[in-house]
Image (tube, helix red, strand yellow):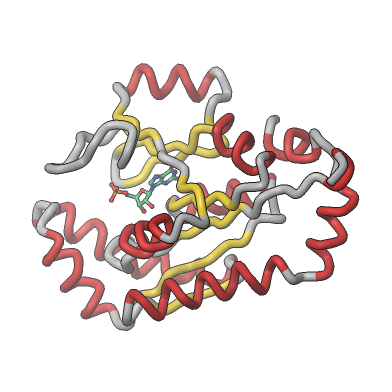
Length: 212
Ligand code: 5GP
């Protein structure tokens, strides 16, 4: 394969309301070894069991704001009173290596990525019902009653954004949802438009779109 035929990885953006099961789905996808999951930075405190550099990079607010100024994030957003952001350079590096990259980010962040990199595949995860969504957040046990209500109320608003995404996957049974996502990715890779783009793509193509 020559430089001019260099294969660029697929950027897969996964969003959905809190409790829809994005985290579990992404974990399963990563365990298959076929994808690279971007680790986000956040100003929120670690939950029990969360590991620095694995779940998140936990940053002080000042440090996070500096990184915004330096243009280190592909996107960032304030979610439930904390900042979250996707470190840019690693994502670009992996895509350029031809690796498929998964971003598990909120809707504001996903829409920002879509503006700059519409070639991404944008997948929205839906819960089977709102009742089930609530049960899942309660079961997780990581939220205070106030934060539970905030997340639950946000979920009603967030679901309206499903129309901005390319695909919607209902997460009733994890295995089925994961298989659907893998099938979406396989289908996207067979898209004639993408195949043609990959053939003509030159080094730097990603830079032009993501680096600004
Ligand atoms: P949590 O605090 O439950 O880990 O995450 C809260 C929300 O922030 C989730 O919807 C999650 O997808 C989102 N999130 C995690 N990392 C990022 C990121 O890098 N950027 C954006 N925009 N949202 C993120």
